[in-house]
Image (cartoon, rainbow, N blue to C red):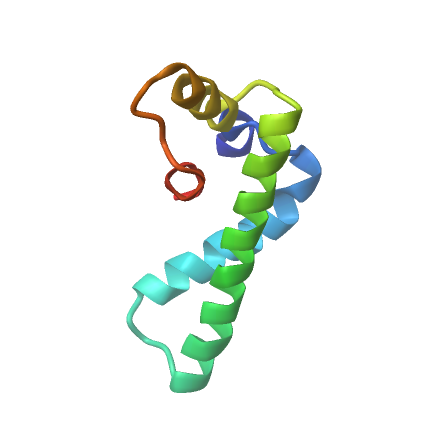
Length: 87
């Protein structure tokens, strides 16, 4: 459901689920240094993915919260930055 609300492609669900699992495991506080490094790299991949999705949504508007944030941001004088939308 969240993927639809955000307006992300359903085909990306397995990848997003994997990133979600990694984020949850980071919050557990039980990670080795190697796991933290690997999970940090994976988290950076998630941010790159979201950044690309925001850029794509700016050029090809679609339904979802991401597109709505972009529309509102462009219509408002106090617009959100790209990074704020990604966050």
